[in-house]
Amino acid sequence: MIESTLPEPRMVEITLNRTAVTAHADATILDVCRAQDLDVPTMCFLETLSPFNSCRLCVVEVAGSRTLVPACSRIVESGMEISTDSERITDARRTLYEFYASTVDLSLADAETKNWMSKYDVDPDRFGRYEPHRAVKIQDDLYIRDYDKCVMCYRCVAACGPDAQNTFAIDVAGRGLSSTISTEYDVTLPDSACVYCGNCIGVCPTGALMFKSEYDMREADTWDEGRQSITTTICSFCGVGCNLELHVQDNRVVKVTSPMDHDVTNGHLCIKGRFGYGYLQEEK
Ligand code: SF4
Ligand code: SF4
Image (cartoon, rainbow, N blue to C red; front, side, top):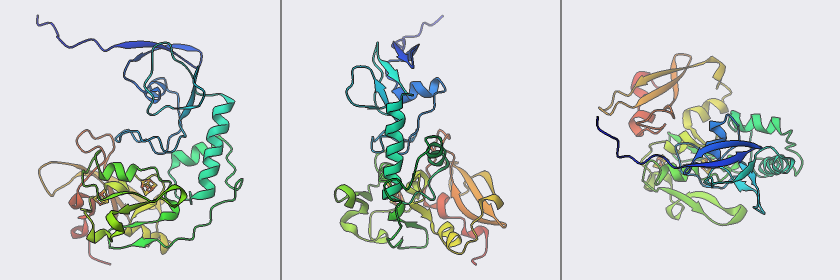
């Protein structure tokens, strides 16, 4: 019998909501919470990207720590006493959602965000609800950017950069409330390094990045997810074999996504898989 030479994973003992838990020494607090079926809200965090700590919605209490601690990026330590359900945490998360509602249009935010806002009894008018007023940026026929809906979660920057595409076409420009996601020197997308993989759209939690096809249908009031089906298939353009999810309404493909839990693509695609479905249907 051949004995394994792999080191045993190092484990630590912690306390989570007054219960003793054994956890991998390299796990984050969020990893441990999810392994224990303890739900924690997130907005900037996505399993397929590195934690960025921008939204602060996942904060928890750690005994001995003066401030609340972001669960998505803090690694557990032996003896750590963590609380995820105190009044202080609920107040912090509710206030954060209320700040978001006063600075961003959350009307198309993902279902997770809407569920948590309802759970925490968030009052979107507490600090004055945000009124959309910026022009939607439309520079091509593939996708749009709506700054009114951008929560500056940096997911698109991470997906365009080191976590998926490695193209680095976009980054953060400006400071404070004036900061925006921008191309280099704010050139138009077709003049930038963008290769139109659409991976930024795939990770955006608020609808700030959207297929032009979806945007046009929403404008025409014909977008209806209740009438859409999603068919998973294999991309036919090359031999990699990426999974595609074809969103179909009225017998037409209206957008293409990729499953996040696919261990080859992790939800990411290239321009052909993401946008190359025109040959399936006549132009309208
Ligand atoms: S489409 Fe791809 S290359 Fe272009 S900005 Fe988005 S992630 Fe970057
Ligand atoms: S465009 Fe979307 S993914 Fe990018 S920072 Fe804004 S909200 Fe996040």
